[in-house]
Length: 158
Image (tube, rainbow, N blue to C red; front, side):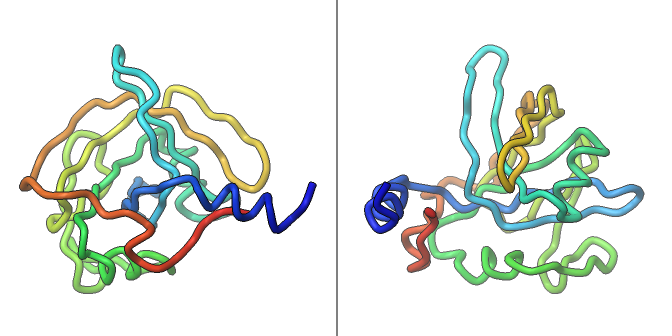
C-alpha cells in the first residue's frame, strides 16, 4: 500500500471535536477527542475511542462511564486546552468550568450540548480502545453548529 495515498484517503474522513470526560477514582478527567459516532438509535449507543495507556482511557475502563461535551464552532481554544493533561481545581479544569450529572463525569458548562454514557462494550485493537456506551442522560446548553476538526487546521489520519 502506498503510504501517501493511505494518509490522503484517511484524511478524507470528517471529524467533530469533543471533550470526553470520565471519573478517575474520586476525581474526574477530560480530553479532546474526535473519534465519536452514534451507532444505534434504539437503544441510543455511541462509540468513542481513547488512546491506550492514558489516564482517561483507564478511567473510562475502570469507572464504566463517560461524558461527551459537544463543542461549538469557534471553540478552538477550548478544544486545544484539553489536548494535554489538565489539572482540576474544584469545579474547573484551569479556567474551564464543568459540572456533573448522572454518571459523575465532567460536562463543560460552555459546551453546545452534552450526553453521558454507561459503557456496554469494549474493543481493544491497535493503539486505541473502542468504548461503546449507552446514552443515559443528555442536555442542550444552546443551539448552534458543532465544531469540526477541519476548522482547526489540523488533520487526523495515518
